[in-house]
Image 1 (cartoon, helix red, strand yellow):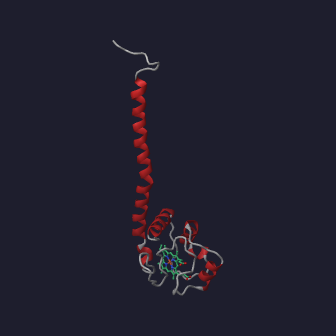
Image 2 (cartoon, rainbow, N blue to C red):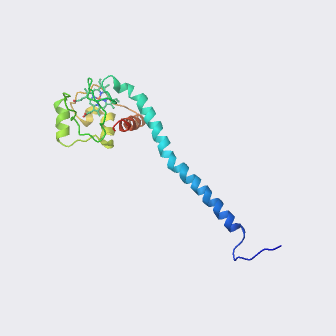
Image 3 (cartoon, rainbow, N blue to C red):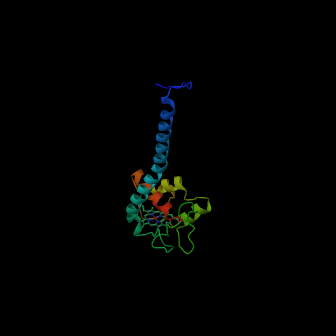
Length: 143
Ligand code: HEC
């Protein structure tokens, strides 16, 4: 048997490229996972948005009983032009409240605790997953 001694066992070469291919495959799968998870969150959030849609648009600029939520993520509270906010919401915005994810999370869990005496007639969402998903949806329509 013509086995040339290369100083390393013969299985090292083929073994390492096998491992390499496997790890590239795993890397691709891992890179795709968050996107798949995010798409699911957005879908769930879109379904959940039915609870808000009586009072809010999210995909057009027009206001209903509540201001449009299109572009709300990272927007200053109380800042949609032409919408008549409560004084509480205008004051909160003037004091620097921005609807980033942590603030939206707190507001949607308990609107009256986050911005006392604001006029949103909605008690909030009890399930943290619902809140996360609805924010994922709002982000997806925030342009
Ligand atoms: C019964 C009507 C109603 C429902 C249902 C409702 N909202 Fe509101 N929402 C309002 C009103 C009215 C305001 C304005 C509050 C103010 O000016 O004090 C508001 C304000 C907001 C704001 C602040 C917007 C800004 O420009 O500062 C966010 C964010 C918000 N709502 C999210 C939601 C989400 C998400 C849902 C569903 C889970 C929801 N709302 C359900 C009526 C509603």
